[in-house]
Amino acid sequence: MADGTPLSIWIVSGEESGDQLGAKLMRALKARLGAHRLTFGGVGGHAMAKEGLNSIFPLEDIAVMGISAVIARLPTVLKRIRFTVDAVAAAKPDMLVIIDSPDFTHRVAKAVRKRAPHIPIVDYVSPSVWAWRPGRAPKMRAYVDHLLALLPFEPEAHRRLGGPPTTYVGHPLIERLDEIRPAGARMLSHDGSLKLLVLPGSRRSEVTRLMEPFGEALALLQGRSSRPFEVTIPAVPHLVEEIKARAASWSVKPRIVQGEVAKWATFREADVALAASGTVTLELGLSGVPMVVAYRVSKIEEVLKYLIKAPSIVLTNLVLGENVIPELIQWDCTPEKLADSLLPLFSETPERRRQAEAFAKMDGLMRIGDEAPSERAARIVAEVLEQPHRA
Image 1: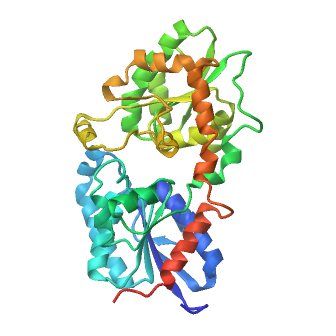
Image 2: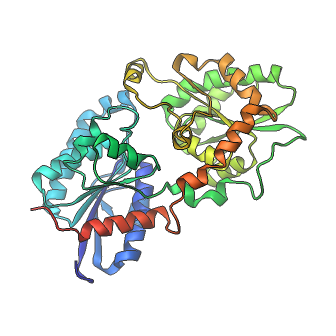
Image 3: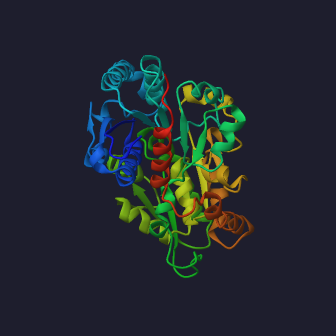
């Protein structure tokens, strides 16, 4: 690939988090390969649009989460898959990068590989093959030339399962440690009220299922704790009103904040957290906030739990390789058990110290050197571009 040769790169994301990753990747690719020689196409949102991508349809058409929502929108999603495949095949880009949302992006990649096998395909964000449906890993080899992993244990998982070549490029959170951590060492406050973060999820279904047991657990804690505590909920904008309505009946009245700046400020000040399972557990672990994690799913999704192979559903536990964070799932997610698990974290106890000592290891486990995650991802993409294309 000669310097100065025009390059067309298509990037297909399926939701907001993928749009953010895609935008950073585009920026890093322009810095590495030269903005003057790059053109972008594909599917993205506002962040990717700012970097020069004209999405072939609105990201909102396919940004659906959860089995029920996917089923309801299935005709639209299938139509968009076909439309995207046709567009990629017609554009004949030098590379296709798919980002997360495997129910959409992997179907696109499989079809593109059949229609245009010469187009190299990079997958940014591994599906959770280490947790369930491990048979997906070897199948990915047929349509993914290289996988960019966000979690340090994923390359070994794909090697063991027979997945595609995989490189750990780092999680974007490691670029934001100064935002999510206090300036000095995190110390449990001994004066005034404890600061308790409550994070009921970023999806409506999560908020619907978790706000009631969370509120009842706080009421129990109010009667059991020897120290008063203040509750803050960092809410995503589209769920603020839902959270306010459901918190109105709580005996412990929370402060509800919006926006990333306010969210990270609460992380820096927090003493303990009660959180829904998800990326937020990684945010809390890197921030050093001791936590209890809970989750509830629908009856349909509950059946799928028997297929889960991972030793934990908490990302921080998986990165650490040990289950230091209590996780209360489905029928274990009761107010009594939540309160019982949270109370030891309200003071200097072995349970609290164990989490703090484990979190201190995370920087070393997730470090990638001097490169930023987006820069390392761009470097791997450039290397794949340099490789001989398929016939």
